[in-house]
Image (cartoon, rainbow, N blue to C red; front, top):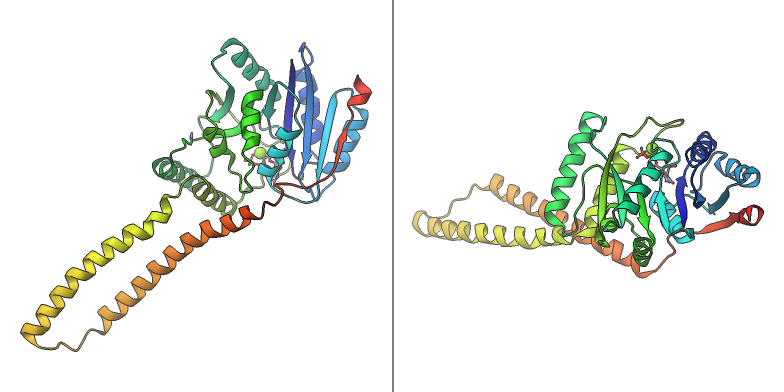
Length: 314
Ligand code: UDP
Ligand code: MG
């Protein structure tokens, strides 16, 4: 049996060694083989030097995938899953918010309950700021209503997957990746394990509010086409209302003569309809733009080099 740890890293120079030491400590007594796959996602600091150093000095099997630029965590995870050779693969952050020892607990669950194909860690209680919490609740309510794929609130990318599920995820080679959706889309049985995320060891989170907002839109566009119907529904409703209003106006004109003032109502109608039309166009644009990029079949990531210290250990 072999286990692979997939660790996306972006500007984690202060964390990678701490993380590695923590893994070695937690995995000291295990009987199986394991490999650690670090993805350097175009870090602007010295992460890559630290990783190369680790891979040179360490007795453990370390692979380093060095991206040519920052492609994002989603691309990092994909690259890691692709390089992973284990029967079990775990995705884990480099900042020690997620304890490597929990991977062993996950493994235990999978080995004891054969009906499960993966374990996903989820945060029961989150210490997010007020607005972030409200926004995230809203997002989950909305996306679960309009999408066929189930999104579990608080579920993280911190997971342990069996090989068959990893292969299924690799089959999904779309450019716009939204892993929360991909994990559900592929199906299989997932065990949800509550965990408490620790504080970041060093450095700061790369997520801004705007970043999360864009990520939410990404998820909606990637996993449901319901927004495209908004234009249809709005169109039907507005046409209906307009038709009734038209009958009222014609009757009024016929009975009472021509009523000249109407500047405010005309302008409101023009502005409102203009707004709705732009909104609908925008939605179509979101989908069309992604279709355009997907048809180019661009690579999800570009690796400058892949370093593997395996030969040293075996
Ligand atoms: N990460 C990455 N590429 C990015 C942003 C983040 O590989 O463009 C990695 C980062 O190094 C970390 C993990 O993804 O290991 C989670 O990032 P972060 O801690 O910023 O997110 P949070 O824990 O706040 O959700
Ligand atoms: Mg983090």
